[in-house]
Image (cartoon, rainbow, N blue to C red; front, side, top):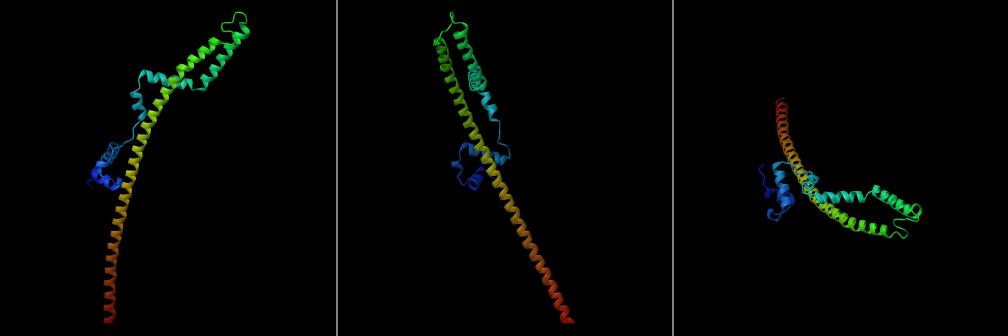
Length: 187
């Protein structure tokens, strides 16, 4: 069973080998070599991340958490309570809290692009995962087709074997009939 990528491409993908993508060729090659194709895409992504990427992901993870939201609400309550009731006369930021608005605007101005960077990286990770999933699924389909082919070959060889056995048994029955016929004609 000496197969090539060309044979597999024609048989299982119903395409010419020159029409295969690099990914499909790699899958067929791994099928021929009987090697695995799955890998941990998280390691590959983590290997190429810069410090800024990791920092942006951390900020996005923290900024998008309930802990951050509840902590920020607590901060706002403390800020407003402190400036309205506790520091009445010597309030650091009296009502309408202009300095607080400035701080909130700066946090939003910095946090939004960082979260967008993290989302862009997540989108890229999703693309990598989708390509890897396609690769693994294609390999699984090819392996299933190969198993079907092997089962069909086994079934075919069993049918041929049964046919040969039936022919042999028919010959034995024919010889027995001939002997019985000779014995009956002799008696």
